[in-house]
Image (cartoon, rainbow, N blue to C red; front, side, top):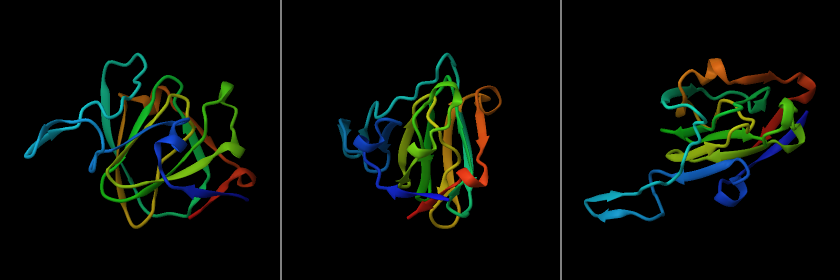
Length: 164
């Protein structure tokens, strides 16, 4: 089984896959001052041709750190925001015709409160909880899971162990 090391999250290393924005401790332009500060336009989610965003919760319990399934959405990006715990997410660049780029998978640790925007076509799947249970806000166009979700279960020979 191949392995992949967890990488710290920073905009430069994550840029091929999307954008990040620390929603709890923002370090960007703002409007206003104490007691009300508005940190505007921190990240944008490409919803393709959809006119409606849907907000869902993905609750993940701690499980073995093995990538055994992955997915992508052809026509939309996806927002991922861990609400109460750090998580790990795997990503790989978008590929033509669903060609699985196993050798290009990377794993990032996403601190709670940090928004990650995945570009359309980027391979990913449900996050891994670092400790205990994590509640993760997922933003996609309505019913993307039914209309634009290609899921691939990896045979044991292609599965990837995550090394923290």
